[in-house]
Length: 324
View 1 (cartoon, rainbow, N blue to C red):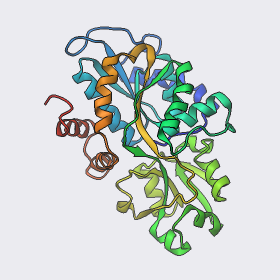
View 2: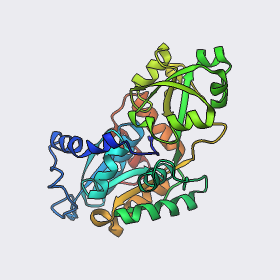
View 3: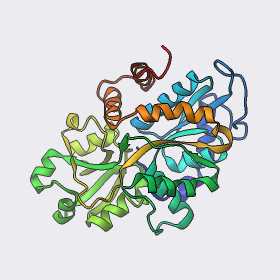
View 4: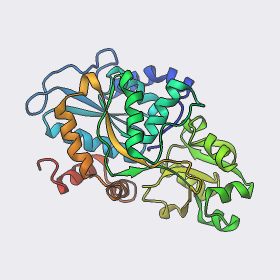
């Protein structure tokens, strides 16, 4: 997501090593045991190999490709490894099986907060990005993670219903949905079950009666189609989703501010990717990236059906962030 904050599911986390190992093998990469931050031959000056982690939603995939190309242009040999969600890629980042991940400040802060202090821990993220990043750094550093500077581009979880459903029930806000007493089937990722700003937050903050989760992913075409068809009533997506109109969907306002604005920032394994050169290369990109850019990038992939690799390259060339 993105999507993105909240508590790790024990069952999912327990299967992370097996799933990740299979994924790496399928991509022809090194196994978990073999992958490290070791130096080797690479593009340009041969600075070594970096694995860029991506979650399973469009924005994360495109950002990972952008990171990969920026770092390749800086002289590293790079490849992208996509995993379903943070419950899988964050432990791999700690171990150096993945070196760099595009992240969201508030979401990751609360994920690590829950991982350390439990699902009922007092929130550390807020609308103050400086305080949120400071809290994130304190949680990330003991795990061997280095948090790089946050940018102005932001995204956050959002929830949408069909325009027909909204009209029938007079819905404009998530509070309206809770007050409607409608029974809701939510299309989302499986991790929504325990993440505090997803199902638990919707139930506690808004009183929404969520009877079931439909694990179709975060803002995927399948998830949005299920809401369009009426199979599900609500879909978890993001504020930078560019295809809601295509499915006849509308966002419900988060009027009680359950979600914090999530500034995009790179997070790296301090040992394998903590070099100043990496921070400098990614910092230039972070400073250039805007929220409007995220929306455009998502639209090119989801609506125009372009490949994330091509979208990433075109964006970087347009911003003169890589050599053509």
